[in-house]
Picture 1 (cartoon, rainbow, N blue to C red):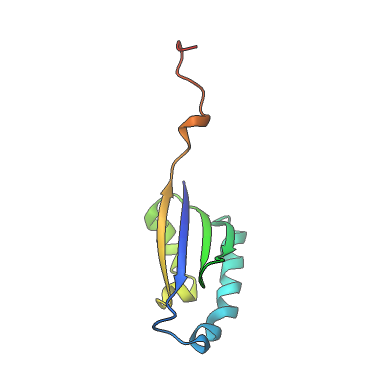
Picture 2 (cartoon, one colour; picture 1 turned 180 degrees about the vertical axis):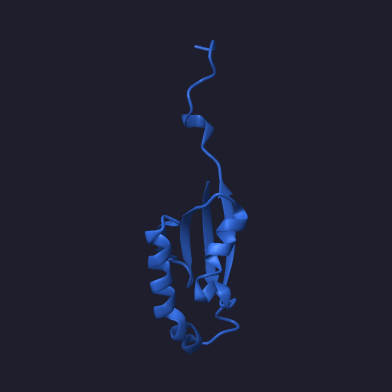
Length: 99
């Protein structure tokens, strides 16, 4: 199952220095999760400080567990919405007998 994560840095609570102290560890852990096939794609947001990720996990619980290994997520420095994704029905073949 795939999940879309839309996150933002909690800049109202944490200083740039508090983010900077975890950035390198965050990058290294993101590489680990990418190597495992958990993170499929990741983008920096263009509107505010934050990121969007496309994840692959068996469940929402697993997605949250794996996200919790990322230092910024684990320490609450980012706020994230984890959205389960379903296949788009418009690309599936029509039901039998309707052609």
